Image (cartoon, rainbow, N blue to C red):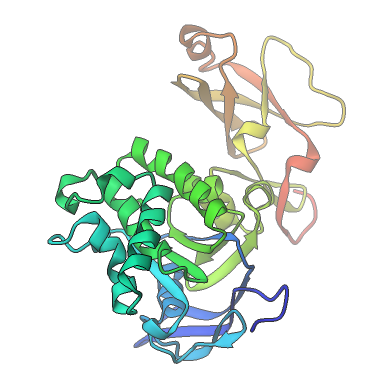
Amino acid sequence: MAPEGAPDISVSGLTKRYGDVVAVDAIDLDIARGEFFTMLGPSGSGKTTTLRMIAGFEIPDEGTIELAGEDVSRLPPYDRPVNTVFQDYALFPHMTVQQNVEYGLMVRKVKRGERRQRAGEALEMVQLSAHGDRKPSQLSGGQRQRVALARAIVNRPKVLLLDEPLGALDLKLRQEMQIELKSIQREVGITFVYVTHDQEEALTMSDRLAVFNQGRIEQVGPPAHVYEHPESEFIAGFVGVSNVIERDGRRYTVRPEKINILMNGREPQAGAHVELGLVRDVQYVGPVTRYHVTLDRGGELQVLAQNLEEGSSEVLEAKGRRVSLEWRPEQESIIDELEGGSE
């Protein structure tokens, strides 16, 4: 039995190579019991390979994987206390929804009465109690995803691994399922490890996230901290949109929504960093407007402003105008100090 407070998942020095390609490069990571943890990164960054090694579908070349304190690095998938939900659902088309959810329990020789009860509870949890007699082909994409989730939960794993599970759904349904998944995770209390390349999905759902890049983890932390305080230029650009600025011997980032655009002679706040420039382009996007401003001191910044009062005609007239931009020094995230002091 794992000691109190021990992580549900602990990987150390985890490495996986395919020929000369290092897919996962000696990563260390602890995931706490009951966390909704997301592995975020672009294609080929190593996140899915890491998930597959935790699941047992890939064997690491080096390093160890512990689940609830037990070393499972060389155990097959069926001997690990985890279940995996994939993007393609992998439901049995000839079985009913109820039979699909019961299947794992049947393989484990759970008695019929208990099987039916546990499957019924799992279907109720994903709001599909009335669909037990249907076949997967009679369900929508979102409903099939819920069946796959119920089938995984019914086995009561310590850890649920989710590999881009919402990738096949349209945007509106994906956003609805994000809220449902988080709600289900809170209700069952199981550790969820979620793989996605979608930054908004990761920021919306996670307790913590790890940002992967070229087989390594560049930053781990709560979504707000990773977004507000990116530790590298890659993270600043991948997790949301950010401006990279070089000034006075420093290279740092500022998020577009942190910058105030001052027109019509408005004065900047005391203590703010101020840049002067020319509005090169304006994009009206309904609730917000994007301004692209070429700076007098070199470089270009993107500014995101809410349309609280102005209409589209007013904001579009800003193109070609001289403006001042301001932001507070604490809204900067330093990437590195440059040699040679000030410019």
